[in-house]
Length: 453
Ligand code: NDP
Image (cartoon, rainbow, N blue to C red; front, side, top):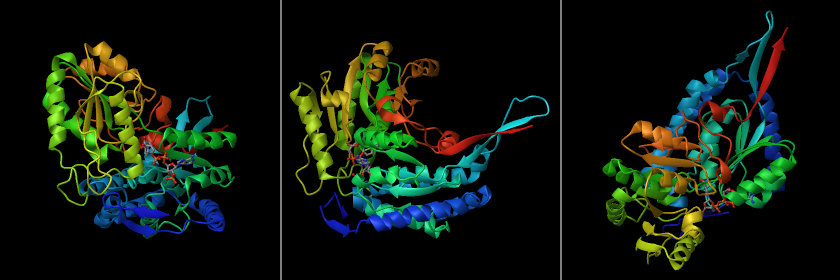
């Protein structure tokens, strides 16, 4: 397995993947550790998570640089990612016992009926490279604290991050086997998931990867959570605070090089403010600093991988060929590394890639609409349904319209974001299940009914 710096093309390191014997040993260890781990009092598991938070904070700079080298995110954003991971650990260290406390139900006199929350066992996590630490901590913090053990199959282009995450839990004092990294490619996922020792799976990534995992899990009747990306609308209504909608819109589309499932991808702008908004969006995109991700001045680093950048560029070109108007960007930068400039497309014809597919890079597609109803129609005209952001000065109007948007979350006058306290997940092709918050920690537990007569 090779780690390559997408900013320079330099080969960083080569790792030997785990062979069948190594995977076998890790699955055995996961099972035996689980039997002890599930008996560890919840308070002790919370304390270990506090330790994990400390390890993350203490090693923030090192972990951030590792991410930036392996997948190219700007260093300031990498540091923020490690801090957010520590926050998620703090959150579950404080709240896990509340979230997992017994639930009492109405019951006949003299009888006690309740639901208790038991762990399921080893959970396989198939994770992507875009937030190499956050996506992993987002599953590990709640699920380990609930008494499960974790098996991480990380994306093949971030093996250093995958091993560093194993180090976080080892240094925090978790028992050997509570969190293990499997250095394997995607072709090994099927047999690992089919193995009886693995009890559930969570995947964040593309639709095809999600479908493959769901198919195997379905065949073996294993619970899954899938987070598969989106083409989120960013709706700017006529009464919106344009300065705020612009500043946040630029960030929401270009953060992490635009490689985020909940990035604003389709800007849907009311005709009364359309011209001004588009002009300012183009100017703001052209003002961003694209370049060395290790520099604190950089807003947009390279795309994580030259092949993924080529796919993005194909989507842009096909859309332009179909009749879309290119207002800025649209060509890979003529320099070493996978650099793609912030790009704005308007007048996008229905059915072209920028209209119907997820654009996983800094490409904004802008639609002009006549009123709020049309904005909702365009927003819902997608096979995805992850998040949405809606801008209006009228908070009541915003909440009314939010009910009409087909998505797992709607943020009014704020960018769509994940937050440990708040449920996160999608509908339709964006996947199913919820991560984070109380809902997230309860995805991989046996909600066991206990009736006491
Ligand atoms: P993938 O979905 O291919 O990769 C995500 C994870 O799934 C990786 O660990 C990958 O392993 C694994 N995987 C891939 N195929 C399978 C399979 N058939 N069975 C089991 N596991 C599998 O994403 P890409 O990196 O190829 O990116 C492609 C597109 O996916 C992006 O352009 C974007 O649209 C979307 N995406 C969405 C993300 C999100 O946050 N929702 C994150 C990343 C991508 P391996 O690396 O070894 O192939």
